Image (cartoon, rainbow, N blue to C red; front, side):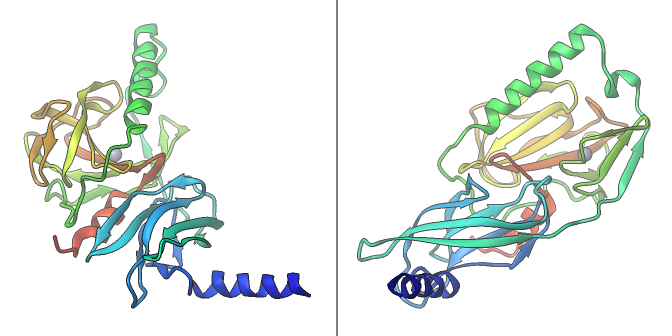
Length: 286
Ligand SMILES: [Zn+2]
């Protein structure tokens, strides 16, 4: 009987969140989606200690002076209910652990067919294969970085050009199904300046096989923005850049069919939709 009673109490705590009033800004997200999880209670907020989604630690920051986490869903996250765990500490010093869940929607993504030079789709030359493996290792290292959070709203669109290819499109290159589009493409003439989305440290500014001249900014807490196919790079690794700082210019280097900006965003291992991230932070005040 006591067991049943305790279970009932636990359920109330989980369902109402009375013990730790953190609320997610949405009930469902698509793969690639992002949302804020913020303190909503009227009383003195708890401090967030750790938020994990599907086992991955999410960055913590303050919004309107309330403790928040930025929650991101990977492009390939399967539909269904996934665990979201919120660990916080009350002003009294009492720790709380609340288990929530987030529903991931199933999304039908359109396909994009492209014809590219064979070496860009199925490279066989040893030199190129080696370079691709080396690039992948470097990218893995970059995305493992965990700096303190540097970012604060608002986030800026890197160029004014319209979106010409959206996030998550299934890619069929030379008739071969490849990994889906992990970013967004903006229209722009070669030489158009590209602005940093938010404050961050330059984690990489180099020429890679697929993404050509590439800049990756580390915004802290595992949040990264990547800018690909650039004509010129105007920042150097280790440099801290302010939001809106010119980081390079639009080009068509690497695996590209013409001048455009490919922008990708990552939250830890999760590849998230840059447009969803920009929209989430767009109406935020500093
Ligand atoms: Zn792209």
